[in-house]
Length: 353
Image 1: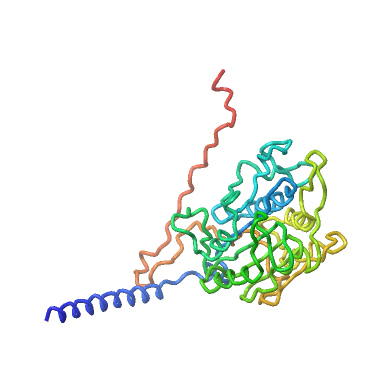
Image 2: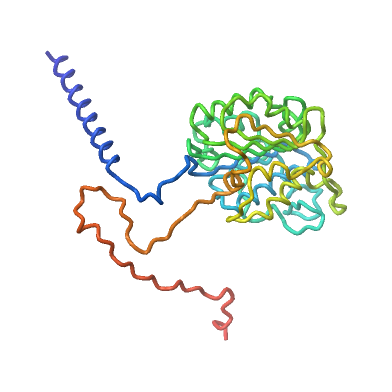
């Protein structure tokens, strides 16, 4: 008899939960948004995973590559909270650096890409194949900080940028281990199965870079590589003051294109895929589009390199409430204009007069 009462109580709890779920579903179905507030795409947010896999001073150009791309995506609206930056070596603090705490991506030294606003999530010996795969697949170890997790979802457009030393079918990490193209393809398939991306743009600047996307088999992936199988990816120029190459050729021309992109730009991914013709890149840029259902020439470049959303500012109340509420309670009320913000002088010298 005791077991029967326990069974009856369990059924009662189950039915109560079922009724609540049905009620919540029906309420959700009754909420109506204005048509111009309904998204026309499943793309709702942007993430970037930027990885430099190289160590040692003579690989200075690789950290300049990744920090330059980091600067571009951050300028176009992707916040640090949605950028995962992995840097295998700290060139800014290298004793050979004649300008401590700086990294430049051109000999004219216009921009220090290792500025005070750079947030490195994985540095030094944290940049491993294991941590990279865990990051992509969401299989982080217990206790991993939120800032070190890729918290993307089924509405996320994800940019993955890799730079370092590679070969036919592999990419080296820290000169001590490597990830193969099959392992990378399987990690991205896990991302798709776990609904961790909506669309994915894969960009890699290494020798024989195209070999790293050959094994991809997941949908909604657009990929570009700085060189085909059997080709080297070359550096662009040397800074005599530093004594090493400071940026790779493909990334240099990609950045030259990105620097002309603004938040309201009409430039497309199709244009971006052809930024480095062979006459300037020397290597042949590889592109893979068979897994991507859209025409890249109709996809805004800010779909991957920015975080731009159309917004509408309304001075009246927007009706997003239940249709069962009486009409008199839905009458828009005028919103009073707020007082203008007060900005204090940066150097209020008058206080010391």
